[in-house]
Image (cartoon, rainbow, N blue to C red; front, top):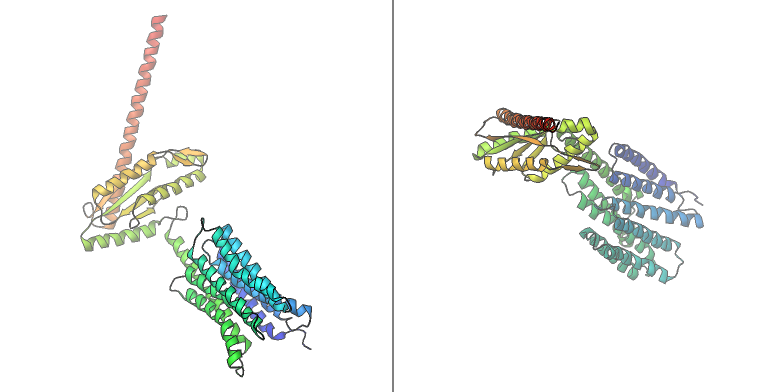
Length: 447
């Protein structure tokens, strides 16, 4: 009598190594998705660990079968949930919790076997009712098409189970395979929706989930029509390893893209940094040369940013920069570029169609936005801005010369504003002196 099914041990070891490799990669890219994926692979390891005791007679074997099959569905549902773009919403959590409960209940009843037919029919009906109830309840807040795909999948599964599970002989087995096939078909659909990009990681992951789902269709068909053909168990487990490799590649691809973004964008505001700004300005000028059109460059320097940093602290200064970046990005077209090119300096590239008049209007609107007080939590700050404008090819025909022209005009504007401010202060001081002199004269008269 076999007590432990040692044939599952190599698969358990392989999945454990893959989970360790996945954890190592995910540790460097800790996101909501990678954490859920890691939990899913731990569920796969639990699946193989439970199946070690599948051949133990009595209650232990039944419990091992329930835990092993349930862990396999839990993993699939977690993989699917990780790909949901709105997974943090309450309705999404209700959806995953109810699907886990429905799958566990059905697999437990199917594994026990000696249960009334009505209980299996009730459990099968829950597959269609529960997702539909969640979608109907949350329709006003979230009516995503992928939710209706889940409803369609599980309503189809519910109808299929009701018609097939009471079939004498292999009805229960077909029902279990249908449940598992639906879970991993859902993973395939959601992965395709979330990773619609032409990369090796996306292709391998989607293809792996599709192959994983087809295992639960092809295996019963081969058993029914070609019973003499023997396929090793490791062959049916290959899609699992394919999915693991695809997920690791996806994490690495995301990490590479993230590093590229950090290299070309300002970490505080998320705007293009000087390196990317120079590349885009060069490309914009080349396009303007080919089309004989104009390109405008605006250099904006914040006027009282140093005072904000000195009086309120660098934390508030960072909030000011982030707010300014948001305001500037909302003012220009998507084809234009807003970049942070210095500590408190921003640059805007206006591509065709544009003109000097358009650039001046944009510059005036940016100055006007910063003339208004900025509400930053408990603080209200008032800053200003000086804008220098240079237009290609009127002001300069080379990139460096254009940048110098815009900088010089910005400094001219700032210098003029300081002179105007000094004159206002001088006039105010003269007025105050005159008032004080009059007061002294009045006092002498009274005396």
